Length: 141
Image (cartoon, one colour):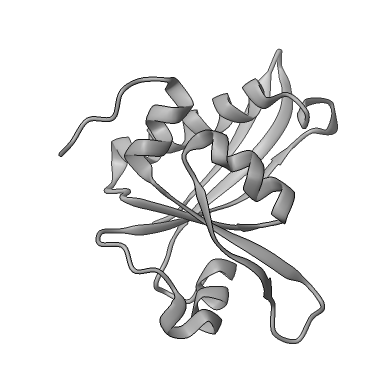
């Protein structure tokens, strides 16, 4: 089961997001991790790709809107299923932005086979990301 969400502000659609379980070969991040081979990180627990987080142009520079949309999505997903680790493939600049939310880059300039596209891969422990998004302390489980 994956999640697709849309965000509305003042009755107007401002963005979308998709969370997909990894390890099934369905995500871009799965493909890029396969290319890393033994250098790919291994984290215990469930793995989810956060992707297709797109905000309307008027809200793209609004870090609080990004924080709120990501927080709502992750909180919802965690209320329905086990979410331990979050991964994403993004540009280098976006990888730096997501550091604000407890993600860290673990591979840069990873090529997508058959294209000239290159990605930065990021990871965050879901509970740390949620805490960073809401400024609440991390709880152990």
